[in-house]
Length: 84
Image (cartoon, rainbow, N blue to C red; front, side, top):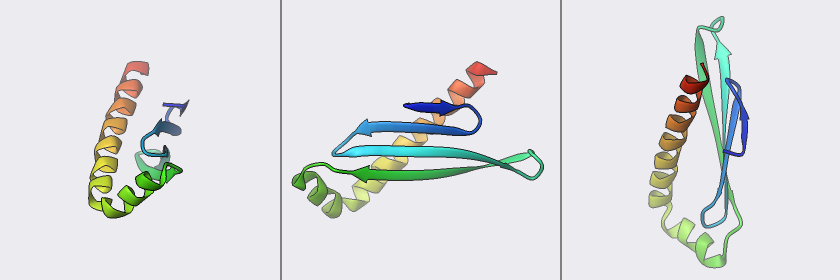
């Protein structure tokens, strides 16, 4: 996690066949009784082979993103519970 604004924004970055950035924004609504999680993911750079692999292995890439997001959300939950 490279940036943390508790209860507002979390940014996770890594090198995985390019520069991977996942941003989680927590947007309260319904008078603060509910929260929407907005997730933005970008992957830039990497070698020609990395980029070709992303095109050819799109399904596996989507599975990896899903798995990583699940772990990131668990880490955010753990950090939130620990801080409260």
